[in-house]
Length: 323
Ligand code: TXA
Ligand code: MG
Image (cartoon, rainbow, N blue to C red):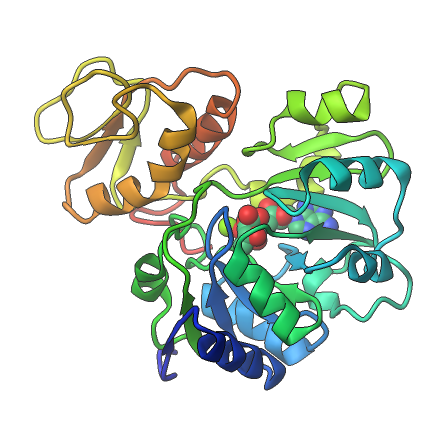
């Protein structure tokens, strides 16, 4: 499969114009957002969207998030409601994805929703992402720009490592500031947290004026990206390590001796921004296991622990999952 020439584009006006041109031609462009790099395609083009699934090796039942630069465009695709308006007012542009009813006849490929009657929409804050979305002037479907099941990319180099030869271009906008995928909230019926992220359940509840519902099994299936093993390095991952074993790669948090420290001062925002990059780096050491210090389970720590527990989940085969 790796037979394409992958253009390396800078986030100059010229690079952004070229990236938009590739999208218009039905190509695949990896681009930065404040959360992680996305692998973008024209959301209205079946062939282009099918190309995302092929490049990632992603199971075809897993739906994609559509990215837009302005609210009017979002409202053309989904059935808007007051809760969505309140959350958009508070958190957009930013690291929040909302799942809403798909508007009948919305110009979005069925491959984007994987046949669901809902659509995940997000308005990123990253300047390069916004410039690209403005230049393309349409909905861009984008999962994280990694091979399915592997660690999400927070730099253009991570993207290139996994997808060179499989996609048309990588738009380099530097490292991602948040470093964890967006929070996903379901707004079809009672608001429900589908994936934790930088915008926490408490942040959402404060704006909505009500606590979020518990995620039920049925909803878990409606977000099949929530597979147990995900974000997985080649190495095994040992969580809550309070002592290191011989030969392990050591990922610390707080004032501990280790190979790489997510945040020596125990700052969760800093830790989130470093998480995927440090997993990539420690994995490159080729050790059998990456051991990770305990991360407090509060605030952004909930999202960090969610990603770490998926990285540590049993794999169905040895090595990284090939889902
Ligand atoms: O930060 C992010 O969200 C990044 C950047 C690129 O925007 N994107 C990202 O996409 O993380 P991805 O495909 O790796 O994760 C999207 C998640 C998946 O777990 C998928 O199942 C869920 O969103 N999802 C998409 N559409 C959905 C829908 N209609 N209902 C429920 N879950 C949905
Ligand atoms: Mg992903």
